[in-house]
Image (spheres, rainbow, N blue to C red):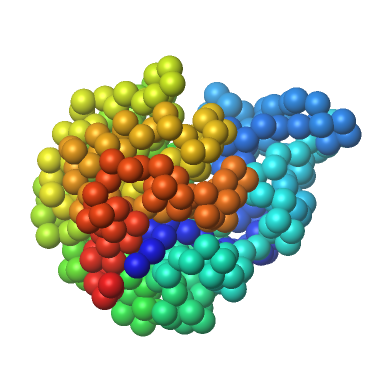
Length: 367
């Protein structure tokens, strides 16, 4: 079974995306696009520019840092804003995302073309917070798609009962199979503390009670970035020690760019220590993280894949793509061939685990 462990569908980004208003989605989009590494261009001549018109970079982790710039989703995967009468653009999605939406039928068509059997739909607030949309995608293609729930991270500690109710409804009534939690979303609302603090415990206790896997998207939340990332890993280790029966996945993989050294990656030893816990799994999404750095088929990361297999085990590694966003760099088929064709050091059992077996087992899917 070829099971993409990390893909997306999303509603039109010109709407509300499950927020109370379109402005709620716009603010999350504006912050995400402002700090992303894709290049900014001046619209009239495509000359290089920057994102300073969108956000105060001295406070980039907070929504309070956003500037008024008539930020909007333009179409063809591009965002536009205006500063002092001058327009600027950033190509975040591939141009094929003409209407700034990605419904389930488009993903499944790509899966058909690349011979992908199943995909797990991931979440991030700037692509919408509505569990109903994801549940509808899964209901439309129940044999092809599974979906993760999302609960607003910034409400978990302050509105625990409502957050727990939303999660239970997503799992028990809407059929979603796990929860994705993105700690940097807390910083957007000016909370920079640990997400395993006491006020979070009622929500986490409810997650454990449901018996679903947790998908954590860990990134540096403040500067310096490496120390912030290692602190996030320490929080994760504490969380797993408290919730010993919960299976955990680090989405996207490690923060690979932090560990770039010359023409390769050198992973900090403290990172590997987190994987001493047998419940911790790792996604492998190198193209979306490093596709703008190294070309296909990216031989620079093969030693790291080998190290992951050695230190973690193929039975805790899972392939994913970040479709459709990754196609600004590679095709869907290249995302597959990158592992299947160019990682000859993997045994057949290791290959099968990484390319679908691990995520299928985690989600209770028959091969």
